[in-house]
Image (cartoon, rainbow, N blue to C red; front, side, top):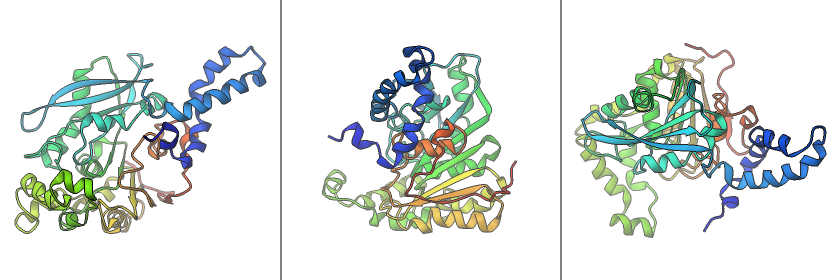
Length: 356
């Protein structure tokens, strides 16, 4: 079994360690007498080691609350809300809407956030989701995007003691969750202060054709009764109501690439991440890479940045990987986390980017 130490990427440790003092500073001050900074340093070193191994991933400082909501088709669905345990009612905090990836439950998606809500002092809502016909394979269904747009109100009604800063609502998602994050930004730009999409499906017809190329080793073939790509094509046909050949408009409506002009004109700050070794959303330069280029070509002042690297599919979307850095880019984490990891290539947003 992979240990917590091994699970945390070595590339992330420099900015993880540099932020420890923010969380533990008050405890260290209490442990050491006034003016004895040197006496506190061994304790700090010991706590740093423990912190790096566990505190980003083990959500001891974050409370997870299960709520329910009615989806667009009337179905009752669960959502998980993450709130800092230190939250005091009456203090508005940012909210991150986090749609889950394909086949990933809302609970598992919430688990990827670890202690980050407590460290950054924000809330997260991870909805169960609902497609037109399927639950965990919603693939940007129009009704699902409208449900995501309602999440701030859903959370406020379910948890009236939690005050949301309505000027600081964000969306973060990976894979299918990234697809739905981008569609939310395109259709409801007035809702969001920023959005981050990691390894997203943005051209659904292309992805449908590429499903047979999705990596699927022996265990995967055994679980799916053959190559996963063929099953995904069948699921997509059920959810969308046909294939890209028989229902082209429906696939285009679920493709963020269709809304490149709207995203460019919205001036919503965007992060678009893609991996050159992605074996799930294959040909990533024709997916997220293409969307990034089209947004920039449409509006050279669009506040979109790109991050390109060589990670496994949706690998950065974890508390112990690059998620702290992505959050810090929007001011959702302490500034110590806003240091780009060594490996990904950053394509920065223009310095004179437009704003809303």
